[in-house]
Amino acid sequence: MTSGQSRPKHKSRRARLFLNGSEVGVVSMRGHSGSWAFGEFVASPQFAAFAPVFANWSSLMHAEAADGRLSATASEKLRASEYELDALRATLVLEHPEARHQLRQLNIDGGLIEWKR
Image 1 (cartoon, one colour):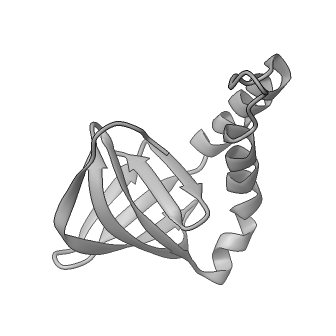
Image 2 (cartoon, rainbow, N blue to C red; image 1 turned 90 degrees about the vertical axis):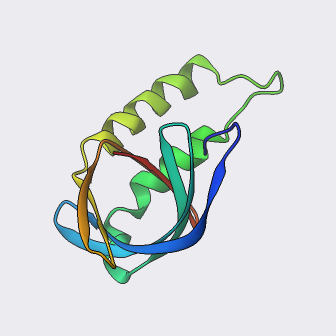
Image 3 (cartoon, helix red, strand yellow; image 1 turned 90 degrees about the horizontal axis):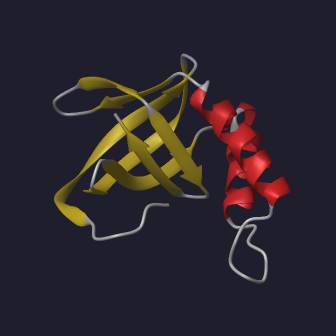
C-alpha cells in the first residue's frame, strides 16, 4: 500500500466496489495520501473470481530478496500482474450522497484497499 503521510477523513464513507460490472464488495473509505485514497474492503462472494489476481499482486509486492529489492524475475511478474489489474474496469459507487467514480488504479491487499480516480 502507499507510504508517506496520510490524512484520515473525519467520517468514514461507505461505497460499493464493482469490477467488470459485478458488485464485489463494500469499501469503508478511511482517508487519502497524495493522489491515493485508501480504506477497508469487505469482499462479497462475487470477489472470488477476481481474488487470484489481487493475491498474486500482493504476494509479488511482498517478495523482496534479502537485500530488500525485487529480483528481475519477480519484477517482471509484478509488471505482468499490474497490467492484469489495470485491465479490470473498476467503479466505486459512493453512498449518501450517491456518486459513481471510475478508478484508474486499484490495489486490494487482504482487507485493505487503495485506489486512484
